[in-house]
Image 1: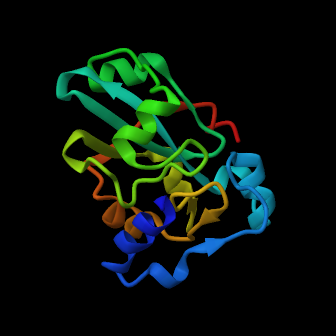
Image 2 (image 1 turned 90 degrees about the vertical axis):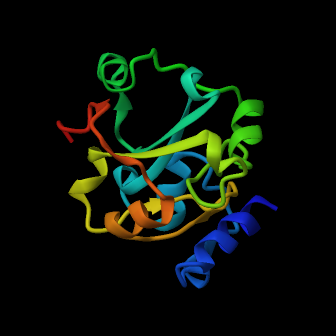
Length: 162
């Protein structure tokens, strides 16, 4: 069902046909990189954090080799980076962990999407498409548009050395 939501969302941009489904899992950065034959850094992982202020969540789409910097997150969003439980992720986004993406969000009024600058070093990246065995290749500008991103943030670390 979730991949259908993502595909329907991407259809508004003429990209539903670009969704790739795999016979193997792509639920983690390492598995997605293996399924696609690319470096893990190019996997655009979607991380979900509780947003107390709006009774919802933040989705941060970041490069596969990036880690959230708690200090930078708090400086940017004014709260501690508190990841959602798998049940809360599913409730807010409509996607289960392993397939979380910024496309076809179940409760868009309660979900704010941001892209981390760690993605900008790549010509194209691969976000999931709502299932644990799917992805789509897109450039950062297209990802920003399709995700309905609120903006670019710099809340990750460890990727600069890569």
